Amino acid sequence: MTNAVLHGLWAVLLAVAVPTPAQAAPACSPLLKHTLPRLQDEKPVDLCSFAGQVVLVVNTASQCGYTPQYKSLEALYQRYKDKGLVVLGFPSNDFGSQEPGKNTDIAEFCENQFAVRFPMFAKTNVSARSSKNVNPLYSALAARTGQPPKWNFHKYLVDRRGDVVLSRDSDVDPLEPGFLKDVEKLLNSK
Image 1 (cartoon, rainbow, N blue to C red):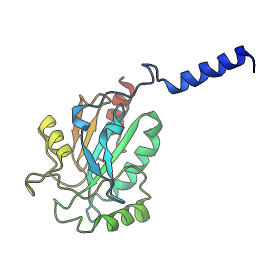
Image 2 (cartoon, one colour; image 1 turned 90 degrees about the vertical axis):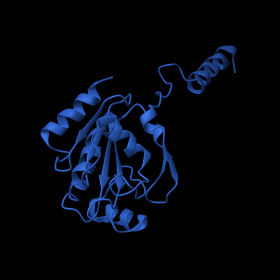
Image 3 (tube, rainbow, N blue to C red; image 1 turned 30 degrees about the horizontal axis):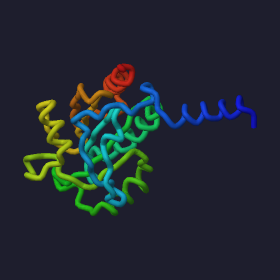
């Protein structure tokens, strides 16, 4: 090989191996500095892996009147995931005992009934009214907004920097025009 070819290969290797500031991972907001177990296998997931994305956090339940929102949540995720949206689902039995199953049962339900592909986490407590051991992400979201979840399918939208948090009630469907407008506004903010 000639020196010019070797120099060119070396330059390509350096460009791939050494991230430039534009390629560097976004800073992780204190809001996301938690590691929580995944629903399917309870393996730990560092929420900082979602830094730089618009994050929709929603507490779910399989036996709730709002359970059909899984379909809307998945549609929203598929529609905007390539633009930087991630949906994070947190099954909870805190309201009306509407999520009595085990993690494996919940995972099967989400897969078989709604073909859920967005990240789902292990069953957790999201309300201080029902447990003293509240998921730390939910504690932070409730503190930030002053609005803890009052029922299943409460939604929090977090901007890319983890600064702006919007809280939306359970009856707001993720595909409603007003909610879509909120999502698009956060996605378009850099």
